[in-house]
Image 1 (cartoon, rainbow, N blue to C red):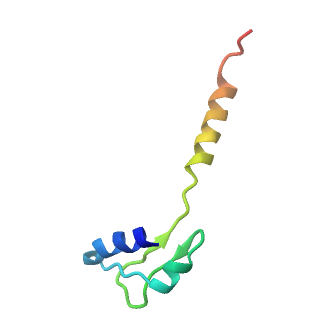
Image 2 (cartoon, helix red, strand yellow):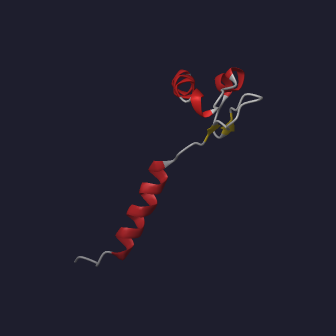
Amino acid sequence: SEIRRLAVDGLAFLGLRLDERRNLKVDGDADLTEAGADANTLVIRAREDLEIARQVRRVMRQAPARG
């Protein structure tokens, strides 16, 4: 939550304002936009590990069999 707060504070010139209460409670995807903000502040949980695993599986299935 501290890293998000610092990041949003640094982007305040774009109209971002963080709802501190929601920021402290967030778990997963969430809208942390403070009321009256000019732009939305969203948390999107990235799962790069799953995407990497999917791509590795796809490549492995396409690889010629070794024997």
